Amino acid sequence: MRPKSDSVFTLLLLGLSVLAARAQGPDLDFLNHNQPLLDAHNCYPYEGHWNDRIQRALASGYPVSIEQDLAWYVDPATGKGRVVVSHTSHTTGNEPTLEDYFFKQVRPVVEKAIAENKRSQWPVIVLHFDFKDNQAPLLQAVWQILGEHQDWLSTAVKTSDPATLSPIDRKPILVVTEESDEQQKVFYDDLAIGERLRLFGSAHEHAMPKGMPIEQLMHLAVSVTPEELLSEAPTNYRRWWNSSWYTVEEGGEPRAGDWTPADNMRLHALVDHAHKMGYWVRFYALDGFAPADDQGWGSAYNFGSREAVVLRWKAAIAAGVNFIATNQYEALAPYLKQEAKELRPAASAKSDK
Image (cartoon, rainbow, N blue to C red):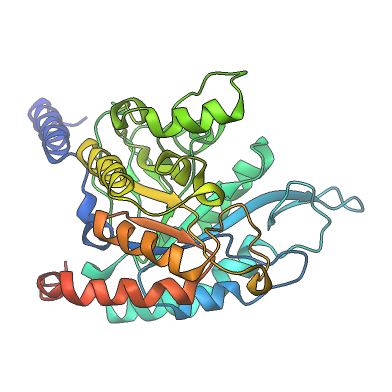
């Protein structure tokens, strides 16, 4: 039996570690020194087309966030299911698996990062999940896949109090997912105290009134204060905020007019509030192209021209948006690289930890 004095000492250390975690609060600098990065939106094939998206994202520079939409396919012949990367929950079996499309392709990047051991530059990749449904077999299978790659993943210990944010252990990949409570149950609630979180959820979205006409909803989205939009404090599991551009400009990308000083003030207010609360913040998705240049991106997030989206990219960078989501990976990357040269000379001089 352990001596009583040892037990008391252990409890004391545990208490001190909890107090330290509380005092530390959210560590926004953990991710790219709290500076913007490219979020490669919908970074996967559609029905066999655009298979090179992940390689295009990786070629755009690091760190980079890569969005993978996930769905569940059950083989009718065997009854076995698998996690696939898909833009829809209506799967056919022709979709690539998460293992093949993502983990196998990033292996050289991860192994190189581990060999170089420049820990202050980790994570080099953010793996962003957008689940097309939340059925238990899909969520549990994803948890299992992440476990098979846990040595690559930035993880944190589950604390006894969700309000106590434990430090994230740096590794080459950080995995994030979105707001679903079903996901929280599998990825956090079902874990025992002391187990490691393999991924981190986003804050709950602000609930909009049901039955309100769309025009009124679009106006409300830009009228609600930042404090109303994001009111819950971060938790050990929920560490980032995922917002559409409809909260910045009325009607979002398709209805955006000129970029105005008022729009810029709104963007800064939203980002500043999120950071003050302790969240990383993402806005999706900022595209600008003529219809003839569409490469499977669609019109839902299109400002209509390169000139229009560049104004928003520059504004988002200046405001400190952590994840700038776009389908135009190569076009956004140079603006981020230029900003990195101007803002991060001190960060590059820090020693690796």
